[in-house]
Length: 516
Image (cartoon, rainbow, N blue to C red; front, side, top):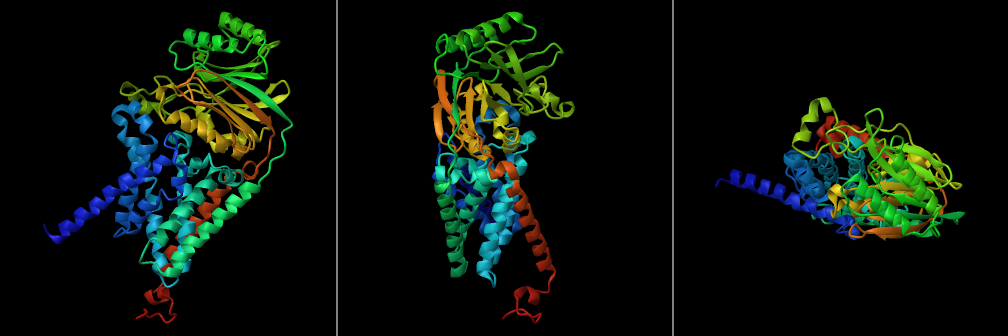
C-alpha cells in the first residue's frame, strides 16, 4: 500500500471515528440523562475536527459527528420514516458542518502570533455558529427544537435560570464555550497562555452563571391553580379513549376535591363537539358532576370537512366556553410540506394521509379568574411560541400532549423535561398532560412539581404557582441568536480582510516581510 493510500485510509478512519463521538453527545438528554456530560460532550468531536488536515477534512469530520448525534437524538423517530430514514439524518448532520469549519479556521488563530486572542476568538465564534445552526434547525418545518444542547440542563437549578435571560440559546452558547475551552486546553500545539485563557474564561462565565442563578429570586405567588391531569395510556379507538378519560375523571370525586381544573391530553376526544350532541352532553354532565372546569382536546373532522386539533374548555355552568386550535402542526405527522411534490411519501411511511387544519392565533382561557395559556403537544417545543403566549399575560401554561406513536421511547421524557426550560424562559408555571405519558409540571423557576412516567396510568396532580414574571427573554426575545449572527458576520469580514492582506502584513511585523 502506497503512503498516499495509507494517508487516505487514515483520514477516512478518523472521519468514521467522529460518528460515535457525536453519538455520545446525545446521552445528555433523557432517558440517559447525563446532563453533566454536556459540559465536555463535544470535546472528542472538536479535537477530531481541530486536527483535520484541511477545511474539506474538517467538514467531513463535523458532518460525521452530526450524523452520529442525530442518530442518538432522533433514533426513536426512524422507525416511522421507513425507507426515508437516512435522509433526515444526513440532512441533520449537515448542520454541524458550519460549526466544524468555524472551529477549523478560528482555532488556528490559537497558534498565531496572538494566541490568547485566538483562544478568545474561538470561544466567541464557535458557540455563536452553534447557536445559529440550532436556531435554523428549530424552524417548525424541520421538526422543531428537539435536541438543543441547552435543554440538557433542565435538572440543574442554578444553571437553567440563564434561560430567563437568553432562552435556551444562552444555555447552548455557554455549554459550547466550555467545550471549546476544554478543547483548546488539551491541544499540545497551542501556546501555554492560550491554553490558560481557554480554561479561565469559561470558568469565570460558569461561576458567574451559577452565582446569579443561585441568588435569583422570584416573587411569591399570589395563588395556586390546582390541576389534575388525566393520563389513560395508549388506547385505540375514540369511544374507548373517551370512556377511559371519563372513568379516571370520576375517580376525582363528585364533586372533585381540591381541583381547580381538570385536563385531558391531546386527541382525547375523537368527536366534533359542535356536531355530536350526545358526546357534548356526556362531557357537560361529567363537568357538572366534577364541579370543575374541564379542558379536553378534540381531534375530529369538522362540518366543513377539515380535520383540526383543538383545546376546548368546558365550564360546569356555561358548557363550552372557549376553544384554541393548534397552529403549528407536526411535519409529515399532521401534514405533508409541499404535498403536491411530496404527497406520495404517505404510501411508504406513516405520514399524514390528509393535512390537518392549522389554527390562526394564540389565546388565553379564563378559569375562575386565573388566566390559562393553552398549547398543544408539538407546540410546546418552540421557545418563540411560548414567548408569544407569555406576552398575552397568562398566569400558567397548560400543554396537552400525545406521543403514542413513540410510546416508551426517549421522546416522551424529553418532551416533559423540556417544559422545565420553557417555564424558566416564560416566567410561568407549566404543566404537560399527555395521553400516554410522560406528564410533568414545573414552577416558574423550573423546579419539578410532579412527574408521571409513560408506564403509568391514572391522574397526576400539581399545584401550579400563579406568578407571571416577564423575564428578559420574554421582553427581548431571541437576542442571543441575533448577537451570535453579528459575531459571526464580524468574524467572516475580518477573516476575508486578513486573507487579502500581504503575507507580511498578516504576520504582524509591519514591514511586509514574513518573520523568520
